[in-house]
Length: 240
Image (cartoon, rainbow, N blue to C red; front, side, top):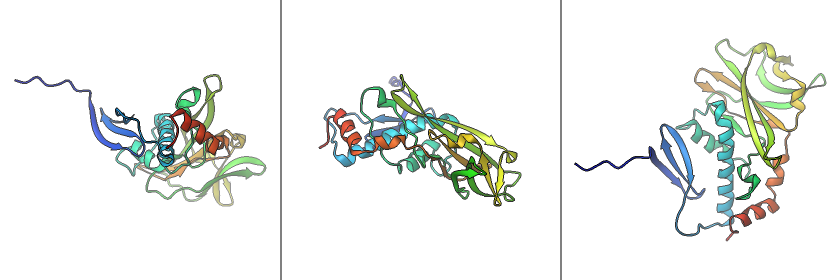
C-alpha cells in the first residue's frame, strides 16, 4: 500500500496575481502568502499601487483581527475586511527597514460590514467638550441590541520609527451616551486626540451595521505622496 505524503494542513483557495498573493485555508483560518516564482515579477505602476494597497490591508487586519470584528457579508471576516479595506487610499512603504511592518490610521478603515443601517457619525463638540456625534435617535435603541465602540490609535514602535495602528473595542452602555437634539453622542475630551479614531457599531444578534473609522489624524498622508511611491518602488527594484 502506498504511503500517504505528509500534509502541511494548507488548502489552496485562490491566487490573486494583481496583488501578488496566494490564499490558503489552514485549520479553518485564512493565510495569505506572496506569490513566488523563479523569474522577476512585473512591476508596473498600476500593479505596484495594487500590491501596496493589499500590503497595507493585510497589516491593518493583523492589528484589527484580535478585536473579532463582524464582517458578515463575506465567506469569512478576513475576506469581508479585505473586500472593503481595499477601497482605502494606497500608502507606500519600503520593502526593508523599520517601516516594513507599518500600518497607518486613516478615515474609513472598516471595522464592520453587515446588513443593519449604518450609523452616521462625526467628530464635533457638545457644549464645548469634544464629542463623537451620531444619528442614533435617543428613543430608537432596543433592549435586544448593543453598541460597540472601536478605538484606533496611531502608535509608534521600534524607537518611534514604525507607525502601527492599535485597535481596541468595548461595549458602550446607553447611560454613557448624551442626548443632543434628539440623537445620541459620546462626550469626552479624548475625542480631541488627533492620533485616534473611533466608530460605533450597532449589533443585533448576528447582524451589525457597516462602519468605518472617523478620525482627524492626517499622519498617513505623507505616505500617499508621489515621493513616497517612488521611494517605496525603488526598494522593490523600481517600476516598469
